[in-house]
Image (cartoon, rainbow, N blue to C red):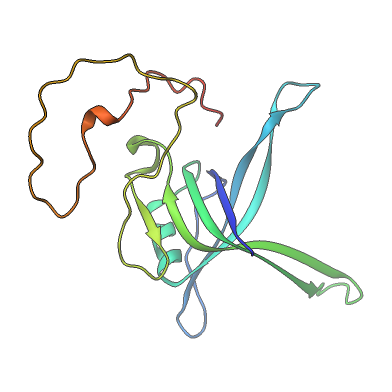
Length: 172
């Protein structure tokens, strides 16, 4: 199985390119914080991971994401190699994440909306965030429940969601 899931920040604005046959693509880098802080400095290190998206997924990323925005990426790892133009005896090796799906991560102000793009699918998903940092909201008294209108989609009762008072403990 070859599956990669990343959550991090874009290091630059993604740039849409086209192949000679008109297929859209974009290459971007995601800075992903490591879980453990450096023992000497106390700072968290980051890994910078190159990602490649094609077709509608590439167009979606360049339209809705920009430098510094949080992004969730799902894809597969691909390796490659090429010969250096200036030094034919030197081979360079590459490792990229080929993107299948992307998600907005963070609040509405953070990434411009909620939901995400599933490559090859034309729909947007509901928010997928599940961060709670061990915080539980105090119990609240709720009004009597009204029957939900008969809609095709229901996100549940607002009382099912917990209140987050501060993002100070969020690790990114």
